[in-house]
Image (tube, rainbow, N blue to C red; front, top):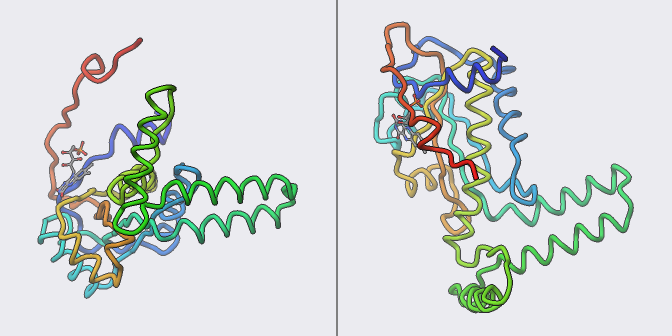
Length: 237
Ligand SMILES: Cc1cc2nc3c(=O)[nH]c(=O)nc-3n(C[C@H](O)[C@H](O)[C@H](O)COP(=O)(O)O)c2cc1C
C-alpha cells in the first residue's frame, strides 16, 4: 500500500510505549516539519508546538496529563497550543517573505490590506463588546445574503484556531507513523496548569492536544480498531 495511506490506516492511539526508545534529532525535526506543513486558515498557522523530552520536563507534563499511561511511558510529549496572539507577527513575516521572493508590490499590498481587515474583523475588542456588535451586524447581513460568519468572540476565535491546530497535530502523527514511530493524541490534561507550566497566558493560548510519541512497547497489544461504516459517515449528495 502507498506509505501515507498505510500510515493513515495503521495508526493507532498507543497506550504503552517502550521506555528505552530515544527519538533521534533528525526524526524529531521531520515530524515537527510535517506539522508546520499542514494547511491553516488564511495560512495564519495559529499554533505553537512544545516538545518535552528531558526526564524532568516529561514527568512534569505527564503529571498534568493526569498521569495517563501513554504520557507516562512516551519518549516525548508534544504540547500543541492554539496561539491567537501570533497572527499579526505571522502576517508580517509572510509579507516580508513575499517581498524577498519577488512577489509584485501590488500583490504584497493586497495581502497586507486583507490581513489588516482580517485582524479587525476577528478582534473581539474590550470585554467582547466589538465582537457582539459585529455578530449582530453579520447576522443582519446574513438574513439578506449568503456569507461566511467570521469568529466574533474569544471562544469562536479559539474554535477557529483549533481547526488549523488539529490539522498540524494530524500531520505530526501521520509523519511519525510513516517514520516508524507511534503516537497517542490526548485531551485528558489540565490545560490551565499546562499553560502556566509553559509560561503562557490563557488570553492568547489554549492547549489543544498533547501528543505522546515514541515506539509502541513490545508487550502492548492494541484492541481491534472499530470505525463506523462509510455509509454511516458519508452522505453522497
Ligand atoms: C481529540 C482526541 C483526544 C483524545 N484524548 C485521549 C486521551 O486523553 N487519552 C487517551 O488515552 N487517548 C485519547 N485519544 C485517543 C482516542 O481514544 C483514540 O484515537 C480512539 O479511541 C480511536 O482509537 P485509534 O486511534 O487507535 O483508532 C484522543 C483522541 C483524540 C482525537
